[in-house]
Length: 244
Image (cartoon, one colour):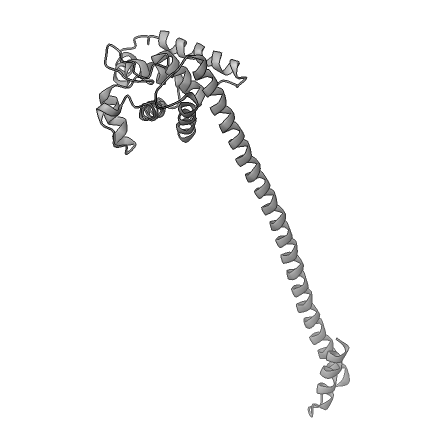
């Protein structure tokens, strides 16, 4: 800084114009102040960038830890749900030549998580619908664990881009996927209302709309069966149930 001031002073001293001594000094001081201001701005900027970079690094590390924790938590929840549901299926004497209870539980939990549904509720529906009999067929032609009708299966298969023929509806994993997708579809139609969704799963969506339009009370026996079964299962495995 002293060298700079000296240079500026010498330059002005050598100027041929008749500038007074104090003018030269004033100009030198002005140049020095400008330079100091620029240096201060530069230092402040670098300090700010350092602080910001450090802050960003801390936030990034925090986000990484939170993300890792959530992933780990989700994995723990996932396998705990698979284990619990596998145990419940086994308790109900489920048997199939090709699929064991753990594989079925895995499919239920995977599809439920994809659709953001509670797998324990799906198990309750399955229990009430078919009593875990994979080859069960109702009087109305509903098939499999989730009791899916042919026309419903075709409609959901198109919506989900599934290549499913009617003779494949009894396939366990396909039946589970169709049933869960159908429940998810109904839940969206009824704006997240599980009561109406369950009644529609049992009666059919058009029937429910017809009764609602006619202001006739909806039959609730099926709804209460599933709800009671759901509460029983969640209590058995110490899960907090949804308010359905």
